[in-house]
View 1 (cartoon, one colour):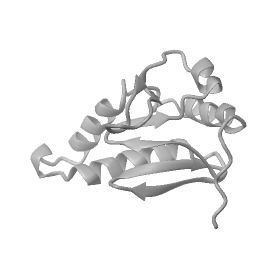
View 2 (cartoon, rainbow, N blue to C red):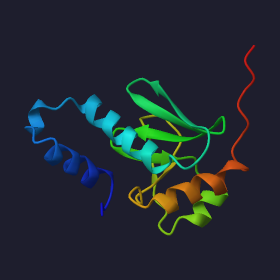
View 3 (cartoon, one colour):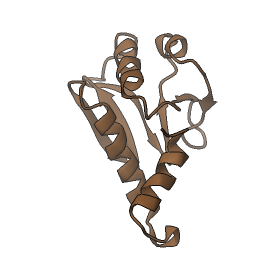
Amino acid sequence: DFEGPLDLLLHLVKQSKMNIYDINLFDLIKEYLDFIMGQLSNLEEITYRAMMKEYILYYRGKIVGGIYDDRLLVKPVESAIHYMSKVQYELPYDGAKEMLLVDEVDNREFLEGLFQVMYDELPNPKKKK
């Protein structure tokens, strides 16, 4: 079991049997994304888009959150706040709106449930012109 995203990243470094100084941070973030996508693989229409060395996560076409550095952050909608046992707000980057930190990334059922309860409350995607 992992206590959080940093714990998972350290595990990935150890598993790859590489010197931590030889690892590209962007590669580690991509591995973390792959892990999260694997945890959510039972859900339909989970996609992502790379944006400035980070990843935006979509569920059935709506933005749920993203991978920012070594953290999974989701939009702070009421359903997510009530669903999570521990609520911690973090900034994805300087100047951004606060989002919720998801610590329970090793719990597949929790992650799937979180995305499902959030869906109806998430804004619809903006129509392209």
